[in-house]
Length: 240
Image 1 (cartoon, rainbow, N blue to C red):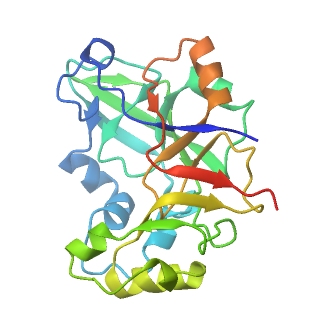
Image 2 (cartoon, one colour; image 1 turned 90 degrees about the horizontal axis):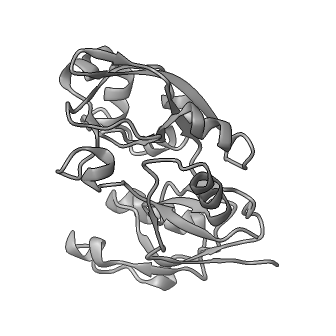
């Protein structure tokens, strides 16, 4: 069984080259104009249906080639690049892809991208997109511990743990409030593939999970831009 940490942005200016901590690049108005599907899916508009999240959870719904992502002039080209405004997946170098080929990922695909740094077109990176875990068949919702603070801050004070016995109960709260309840403890059942080395939940947490064995492999190859931390959520994987 895998053990996990959470992947997070590398912010050390000595590594990434920028000092503001918001990533080495960004999506500008020209990008959004040239990628209307991306804009329609990830920039809020009043045409969004309540179940827009279903498109966010499947790479086949949003995956595409990305062109002309802007890098800051001072940005350094690490193997894992962090781009402000990129709502799904990871920007990774060919070196990272070669390593990931030996590990277990959810259903995924790599899309071609180009980066623009001060007028210079930079290639050699791809956008790794993968399906998110929605939890319908893999989470023991009745045993999870929940954090209702955000709902309470929005005026929804009548929800409690006993209201969530299954996936349907969880989604009904989302449908009623427009907000997903986060967990304190995430209990995954025996249907969860505990051999996955990289995964993300659509709901429940907001983290990218990476296995310790994948971390070891990336570090052994001196992959730059890799940073991680122990999870703020407790994860338990049931064996029965």
